[in-house]
Structure formats: C-alpha cells, structure tokens
Image (spheres, rainbow, N blue to C red):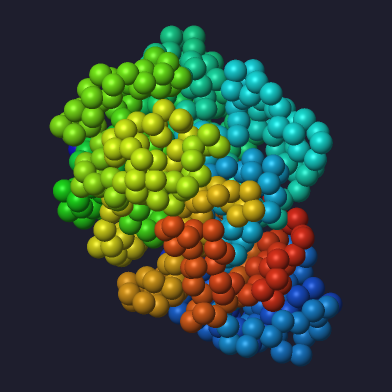
Length: 573
C-alpha cells in the first residue's frame, strides 16, 4: 500500500471547476462574486435578499451585502440597494449562505412514498443530499423488487435509475438528490444474500449494472462493508466494479469494513480500491468506535492526510453525535448470516445456540463487535425502532430497560429482539474528542446518515435525522468554538459540492444555483435528543431550493422545486 501511495501522481484528482475555483483556492472576495463589478442586467430580480451577512461557502470571512435571484440562479451579489424586485426579503443582518449538502442522506424513495418526510432535512437547511450507502434505489430485479410501490394509488416498478428517476420527476420532490449505485444492491441483484463469490460471467453482469447506473447519472459506487451480504465482497470485486465508475469520473464512497480496532486497515483498503480503480475516495461517517479504540481517530486522520499529501484524493465526513445507528442484528458476527438471514434467525429459538452466541460476543474481538464497543453494557444500547410485533413500550429504552419491561433477562431480551428482525439501535460508541479532531481536519464534511423521516408515520429515529447540521452550528461553532461559522458552512456547502461534482452549487456567486438558507447563527439549534428524537430543528428562517422558497419565514411551503442531480447534468466531472 505504501508503494501505491508513493508512486501515485494524482491523475484522477477532481479538478477545481472554473466557476468556483478562485473561491476554493482561498482567493479574496473579488474572486467570489463579492466585488462591486458591473451592474446586474436590467429587469427586476425575482427575489432580492437585502441586509445580509453573506457567508459565501468558500470559507471567506462574512461580508454585508445583498443577493439577487432570477429564476433558479443567483443573478447578482453585492450592493444592490435600489434595484427592483418582485419580492424583497430583509435579512436584517442574518446570515445568508448556500444551502447545506448532506453527504450521506440515505433513501430517496421515501420522498415519494412519504413526502412530508422531507421536512426533517429542510428544517436543517439541507437543500441537497447524497442518497445511497450499500443499498440504493437501483438497480432492481424481480427478486429485489417482487412487487411495486403504491404511490397515489399507482403501482410503480423500475429496474434502472433512468426508470426510477422518471417516476420521481413526474411526482416531484422539494429537495435536490444525488445518487450513487450501492454495491450491496448490485450484489443482491446478481448473487443474492449468500456468502458466495461471483463467477467471471456474474462479475461482468455486475459491472454492466454499475455501467448502466453511471450512464443514468449516478456519481459513483458506494459500499457498506460491515453488513451482509456486502461483507462477503473481496477487495478485488470492489476494485473491478468501482473501476467502471472511474471511467465516468465517479467516486468510491464507503462505509468501511471496520470502524473500530481495524479502522486503519479499513482506510488502507479504501485507498487501495480508489487507487486501483482510478477514482477519488470518500469515507462515510468516519469514527473510531469503542472506548479502547478512541485513540485511533488521530491516527486515522493522519493516515488520510498522508494519502492526500501523496496526491491521492481522499475525503471523509462525520455526523455530530457520539452514538451511532445500526441494526441490532449486527451485534452478532456477520458470518452467521451467510446461509441467509431468515434461516439463522430461526435458530435463535434454541437456548444452546443463544448460549454459544453469547459466549462468542463476550469473548471475541476479531470482528466489529458492537457489544464490546459499548463497554459490554446493555444500558448503552438504545432501541429506536422495531417492527409491529415487538412491544412498542421498548422504543426509546435501552436493552437493559427493555428487559425489565418485557420481564426477562438482558441477553434473552437481546436475542428475542434480534429474532424479531428489523430492530434498530443507537449504541454509545464514540466520544466528543474524536469529533473535535475530525472537525479540525480540512477534508471532513458533514452527513446525517439518515433517510428523511416523517414524525407522523415513524415512531422514533436517531436525532441526526432531524438535527445534524444545526447541531454543528449550535454546538461545535457556538458552544465549543471548534469551528468558525465560515468554516462550518464551507464543509456543509462548497467542500461537499466539489466532492459530488456539483459545479454550480455550494457557493454564493453570480451564476450559481439559488440554493440558499437565511438564519440567525445565534438562534439555530437542534431540538432532537436521544429518547426524544422526533423534533424539528429550529432557526432556519428561509430555505430556497433552485430559487423557490421551501421554508418561507419559518413556514413550510408546498413547493416541489427539487431536482435529481445527475452526474452529467448536475455538474459532474
């Protein structure tokens, strides 16, 4: 791996795009559309925002000024007093910044099956998010999509992103979405869920699915390598599939194979995949989980930084919480699922099987052992969702508390809940120091690691679904002083836009897309808490998506101006 890093001369680094390059290279305000310059073209603005503190997204210090919008674009920035406008909004010295970009926002399907769910992101100031991890909306097959989705009385089916995108665009969405192609999804379509390796013919079939997704507009491949069946994929398989994405200028996005004791080895594997495939690498929700592993965070960041110094394009993101979110079934070794999830869960009725699994969990650590990551304490594992057949009283309780409610012992409660399937939990596996370390690294962005959530249809969630981006401002800027507001906005806007190849987003400058937020940085706050997560963030007074207000003076509108930002039309390489 060292040789790969040493020899690499960075031929696939994403270039800074002309429209925003000067800002990203740290130029003065004159490089970012802030100079007085020539007057804007004649005719009224559709929207004129006046009296703002403009945080441009490039990391430059804020300046006072006005922002004029025409259609879906920023038409002018500067002193625009006296200019005519159909509508004028007095920012009253509030901040105007580019709309925030969620680097891993999970499902987009929920936007059409449960449209009110989008509010959970919009209230955070998120105007664009990347959809997908190991799974993705496409490709699909008869096995992965045995029946269609019923939306507004219509049954929807698709196999490719092109077909899926056609449905979404016809229905409409209020937020922009970028998609990657999940290699777990590709594996399921061709190989199913078992611990099998593809034949040469099957590998070609998988590569064809990746190629189709890239042709349809995906921005890269994505993996979630701790979950079956992704855990069965070899490095060679991931290289071969991601190499296809590299032919289109795509990126390799990854929930790595390990986020705890072997996080450094996992980073090296991710870098190797990117180098061999000819793609940049982006690491989802970087962490060092488990108390004994917390010191590894500094080493992980140093490893990424050394790769970047060597010319390898590697970036990462975090979510601003010390609890992660995971399926409770992941507390058991993934090899047990190799013969299929359903057959394995049936074996959990056998007390002897439970006893042997408990012994394995308590005594082994050569895998992503989440029980050890929480200090072998069931009171640090919070239940956030469960299927209908599970007693609803256990939601928002720890496994230890749930055992009391269910009248059973902790380990039996654990196995009963795993056997029920579909139970999600929030283990307390991280510490604040590693969040501070990550936020001091120039290449780290922000994600929610959560799909849009509708409180009316969902019992509980991780607080990050409702509060991740406001929390960065409220805690890490305002309370802890780890970041300046300008740097926090840079990470949530231009840095993320460049990683996704969105040349026309992430900056306030003439010609850029009019994705904007207006907020008072002293008033923005996340309201969601563990055990009480279904609460919208506060303080985003206006949110514009493609020039249209989706939050207008604090009120959610019914507008649907969101777009599917395809690689070829969304400013990709």
